[in-house]
Length: 419
Image (cartoon, rainbow, N blue to C red):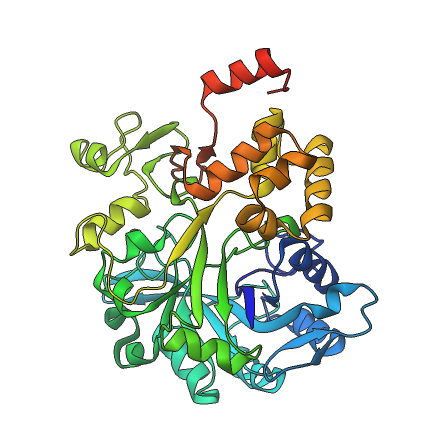
């Protein structure tokens, strides 16, 4: 069965997360996006875990769905995942590594939670902060069940990741030691894509997955994974572990420049720099004299042993997309959360069934029957990678556009389109 999965989101119990991130809204938006398997997120949080036990019922092995759901959302499956923030000292340096955990049942989750509750306060945040070595976390999880999956979240993010420039490691083995043999996968994160990580030895060894890390329902599916397996937890995990391109078809990626840590820079100084420019300034901000935040692209350059464009044999392919609301917003010249964008978005979803159907499958001629030709052109351009990129840096999201300023002005004057 062919389906799309998003394995990393957060509940309303995580900091800086929308109060709308409850199970009902998550299921509804997964359906709108075209996602069949969606993460629960945050299963370590006591109140959220209580929600999961009360509102979910088992379906296929290792998967769940909402009980008593009147709409079509009962077709959406939940998979049990949670992110843990490990902050600890190792080899004379403070490490801040975010780890993503997959579990095959609520019973296994309960056992994991009981052990983690002895180490730190699970109630404080949906993504708990634990003074626990990432290796020890892997040991606890995998000793609870060998069917769990442990992996590095957003691998390259500067502040909180396995390879992060500010607090990470240079290799999986340095982080997980003897447990590195059981780390089968890693998450690309919004500021990197597989092509970047293929240049790194560990980025070639493990399977690369991509997820939204959504903090609001509308962000679900901004990155995702496409499978062709039986619909159950164990088939999904096996496809990931084996890096099987026949069962794990491809990942759906942000354009990495849109991620907020792609380039180096200083947000407070409004300064964005390429790795070459950072080297010229010796890593110091020329405006304030403080160290620059080194972004993902620079960190890849530090760890890479292969050139730009290297494509390893047997790697899972990927496709880069722009969220539909962002394309609509660019065409109309308004913000992505405006009523005008929402109205056009709903019209396209009603016609094509889901956002991913619009972005990946809808033909130009079918799009032009119900929407502006400029919007149809924008969707096709995004699908084909014909985009203009302005990299994000130091917490500032980048911008990916499908039309140049000249085109925007021409459309506005010739065709009356409101840019």
